Image (cartoon, helix red, strand yellow):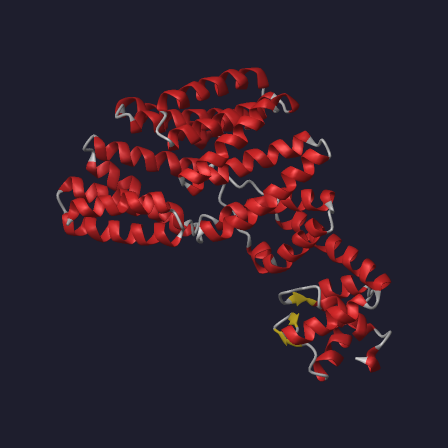
Length: 401
């Protein structure tokens, strides 16, 4: 290392140590302060010759022991470290803005974010440690879409713990700065995550969080307040407090009237209310009303080409069709839905389709086929950490044995 002191390879090695996962040469060159990508690649080749750096395809990495040594070396050059870390943060702020910030309520691809996730996570957590509030807030805005999607493909009890920790930090930091707008945005998002985790301990936290957000709601506009009312309604549905949920949805509608939203935001907000009204009707055995509401959701979602809402409406219509013994319609909707869910790699929705197919086959008297579908669905729910749904599916399996 002493032979490299003050050279570009020395700067590249110290810069590479900031990345816990492999990274492209352009990112290393930027953090090192190199103006020439060709010079950086040549410097990385020198480090490879010294067995300090390894290359796989177009990405570079170092061994853990070498990284520890390079980080220690970085600490002895505080001026370079300060500048390099700033460039590191700015590189990923730009990266996250380019590849994130998507609509998390729609299906999207996150190939770039997924590839860089370990590095992004390191930057964000360093920003939290250093109290870089504005940077962390920007990161949250741009990566929250990806962190949501993780919970529909992997065990949400694991992957969502990270986003909950970040949310706790960001809410507290926003409150300290009296940045109520950001605090409320993150509260809304955190409450939704806790609700979907589906356990009573999470619901207790959500109750407290939403009560606080409702008290502070005047810091946000009518659209936000309507979204908050919808989220509270969803929590009440999960708790099977259907009358209370209906009241919150009515309040959400009143707030929407005040919001005077442009399209397609107005239609999306209306769809949210109709959707959960339909769910309440289904769960209270009002199947005709449920079907009518989900048909409205489907019609309006098609108008604005909201693909995930189209899928969800059809999924519920299939469940209604099963209850009303319209088996051929249910099968058509579920087979189509399963194909769409698989194409979008949405393991969560695949599991729901499979469970509905089990219920369809049970209603038809095909116990063995129903058992196969239910077994697969239960395994997927367990893999996703969706314990409530896994338990419900286990109960369905008991009726088939």
